[in-house]
Image 1: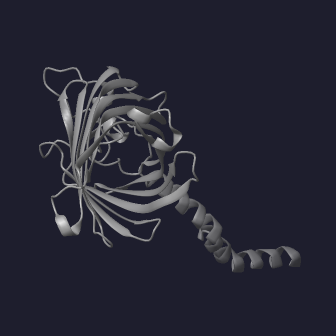
Image 2: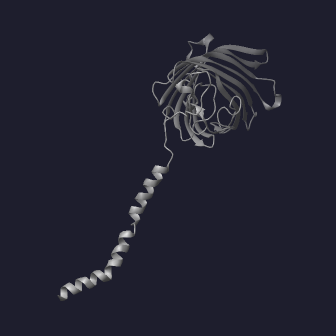
Amino acid sequence: MRIHRSVSLCLALFSPAIAFAQDVIQPGEAARKGAEEAAQAAEPHYNAYDAPADESITVPGRRMLEEEERIGTYKQPRWTARRRFPTTRVYVAPKGQFAVEYWLRSTSSLEDFSRADAKKYRSIYEIEMGLGHRLQLDLYLTAEQAGHGPIEVAKESIELRYALADWGEIWANPTLYFEYGREGGGAQFAEAKLLFGGEIASGLHAGLNLVLEHVLSDDETNEYKVTGGLSKTLVDKEFSIGAEVEVEFVDVKDSRFDFVEKKYVAGPSISWQPDKHMHLLWTPLFGIAQEKTDDGDESTVIWQNWIVVGWNY
């Protein structure tokens, strides 16, 4: 009887404490529940080609290709989530997108095509990030090689891109581009671009860039450039062909607009997306490069070959 009374007394004394302990969430349990709630509330991440289309946006009288469906925060067409042209940029990467790219550009004189020392190579390694708020950040490392000579680091740079509005709210979707970098010899440079892009018709996409690059020391070289691209979709989300053009002029601080170099090139463009992550671009450009000499402009017929391989996450 005494044992029974003792047990009853203990239960009476400690039952409030036991009930309180059952109601208290332990620190580890609280952290676990917090992580689960945060994961549920977080915005899901999609590869751009997998992102769900915004069904509220349609084009009257036209069946929209899948690559022209509007996706993401900025209601941009799916095709703008990947690079379409090596020479011409269009808009910004969707929020949360991360991509890596490798570029190889070879420049050859067609008059001395068989000579190895007449060829120049440029490799570009790029990381691309969609930051949200219509911002995009890119990091570049560039290496160059002349003929069979050594491969040398030529420059490194950082780029910030800002779209002025969501897609379609302003004609040609203007986007501001600023790049700052250092060359291998120590010179610093800044580059500004104004990007335009849009859809001319179903499956017909275009881009245009106005470019000014300025070297901040030595001869303070200015490079003025206009690039443009046109692309026609043959297989939705997979394959397109088109054309690109590039015009470039270079001057120095002591003789502005008395151009020491000129370049005019154009050629076909091929874009292939073998799966939802990967894109491949090939653009061979042909034209004339001119260099100012004491005897006048010296012209060379050139072939500039672009190959781009990219992987989107």
